Length: 130
Image (tube, rainbow, N blue to C red; front, side, top):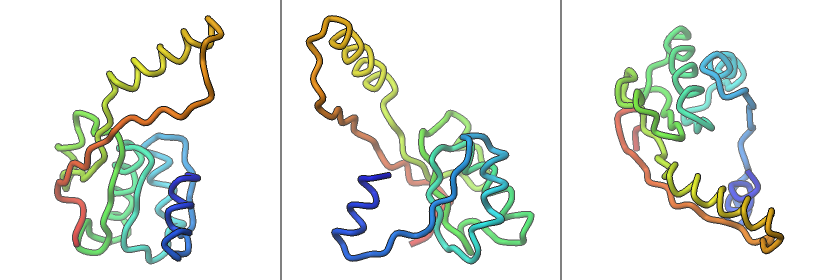
């Protein structure tokens, strides 16, 4: 979140409110009640995006016509959501490899405090509009 807030600040854009959840579809559903008239929502994972999309439909709001929704993870079912979910795919193998390497370095006391960056990929499906 710090990186996101920093990028917005650098661009002179005020950060919109953040609604936190517990990674479940249910928390995404509950979060929808506090998002007001937002026209675009980025969810921390695809499960929360699923719950959010369902809540928006229950409110009579259409995705993507009224609200764009983006998830994160690209879980196998993301393409089967209605509409298919635009999401950010992360490389879980690279993430696991980096985590194990960092753990081993910590155990062997050869680790450093450097940041590890794992690349991601935008999977553009049907839950967003320009």
